Length: 216
Image (cartoon, rainbow, N blue to C red; front, side, top):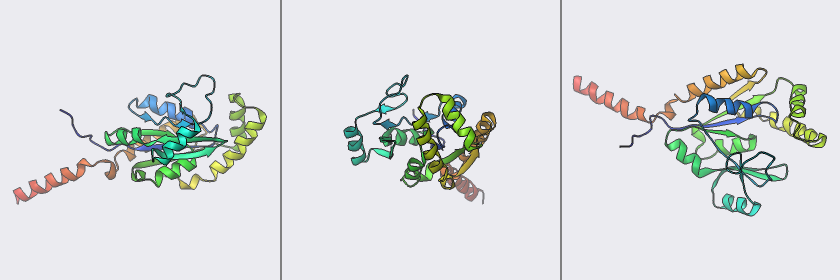
């Protein structure tokens, strides 16, 4: 016999400029809680070396992507560096209705769309800041994934991303991964206990009321 979930799942949004550490932090959170789902985005860009379709991204054509948007199948979508990115809605709704959290590694545009969507009341948005711009550039250069021109473009976009920090529930400065990881765990644990995330509380209070009336 199936049971109703004890709580409703969260849409946990992690955003940051490239190189600030959100992907590493996202992996650490999933190691901490293996039940934490990850929203696999759809994208029209080509796979990078080592990326697997359906695991890192759903790699789709621009026609297919625009078709999903037109049919309302994308929870959020954006156009970044000449490519489209978006989060399929169906798997997310299914997960949170079963009481499972879903983690999003997306930019401010996607975060804003999700926060303003029908699922917005169940979101937890967290922005990760770098300790300095110099450190951010150093991290991008050390990744050795991009040429100098691409790094310069990413740095420009990073500042645009940082300028939207005020639209998030929580903002953390990632100058130490272990400290930031601990802070994230505290935030998530507390938010899971929000009244809104615990639909069973209504029935519990009704039961308390009935018990009280019987005793009086």
